[in-house]
Picture 1 (tube, rainbow, N blue to C red):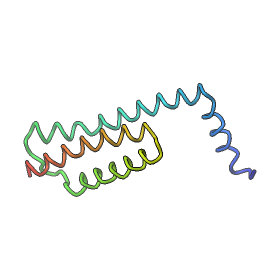
Picture 2 (cartoon, one colour):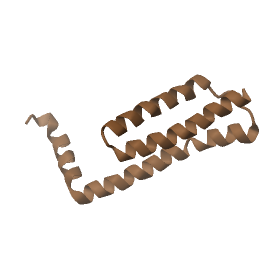
Picture 3 (cartoon, rainbow, N blue to C red):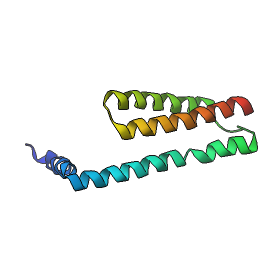
Length: 104
């Protein structure tokens, strides 16, 4: 094994440890929740103010497309955190896109 890969090897070995893996999984689910929450202010702003001024339809369609791609990847690799994250983000993004269309 080359010397530049030693750090990654040890990281992988630590993640294989059940306690470390369990801890890392908890952190991932926290990050998923945080990622979902940071999208909500945009959604609430659009529907509360009934305006989508300054909100890019192209950007949010792009985010939606990326979430669909991640969902397909998560399903094909049986990665539960990716599947959960992608589903929730896509739902929020689809609602935001709908708001942009309704209130532009």
